[in-house]
Length: 171
Image (cartoon, rainbow, N blue to C red; front, side, top):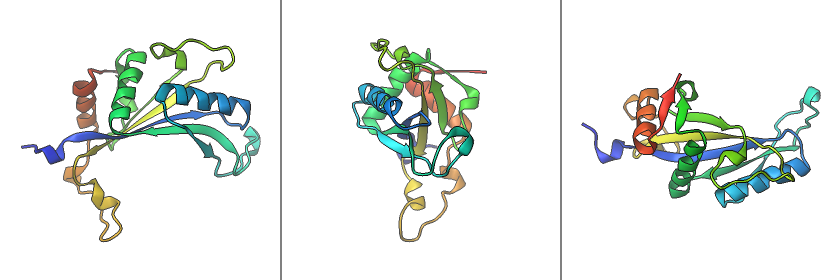
């Protein structure tokens, strides 16, 4: 028997555009995320130097936005519509989170190609949690691991997205 406290909810949705370099393309990516979400993006900073890709430690290499609650649900509806209401089964991990990519921002409804911006794709990460129980892993006093009965399985997250967003799984 499931109670209201063990229902699955969307914890957050993270949109990420990785550019790999600072400069003009980074500001364009920031503008795309701001247009799509109406939130101000945050720059992601490289943690180590990679000589082959010409990346130095501390250099801004991408932008991201974290959406929660109502904003996350509204964006997911638009993102799934852009993907044709389909998500691959391999997009889910063991913890019940889902990840997928959108190859171009113009796939969103109402977005038109802007030659100044060019073609920019993005990664979308959906983090799911149960309504109750996840606080024990984050609290400061008496922190513990999340018990197995409160963890979300891959099948539960697939079922949640199917019922909440009418998404079909492929492959």
